[in-house]
Length: 112
Image (cartoon, rainbow, N blue to C red):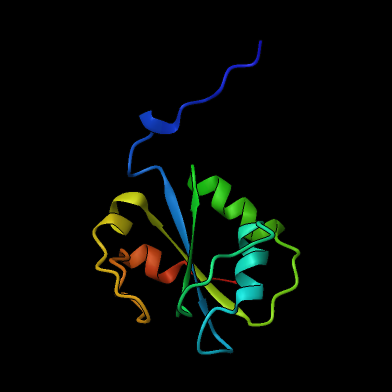
């Protein structure tokens, strides 16, 4: 019998978010949201200046970034932060929040 893992025991310092910020365009396009999310449908919402994707661990986030082979309309800068840091961020629709990256996180930049 296969057991289902419950992530509720994960520390907010181990769960990570990948923040995708467009380098070549002003906002994340709907097509890119679909490609990054892996879903075929994205809800109608105001265009955002970033896209956030949740991962159970930093390793899963890095694996997604390194193995990503989808076609995107824009180029993206990607940074990782913990669930705790994401929860401390004041998010306003239509604006790029000031995420509380550590010095090391601010220097760890990936590109898609």
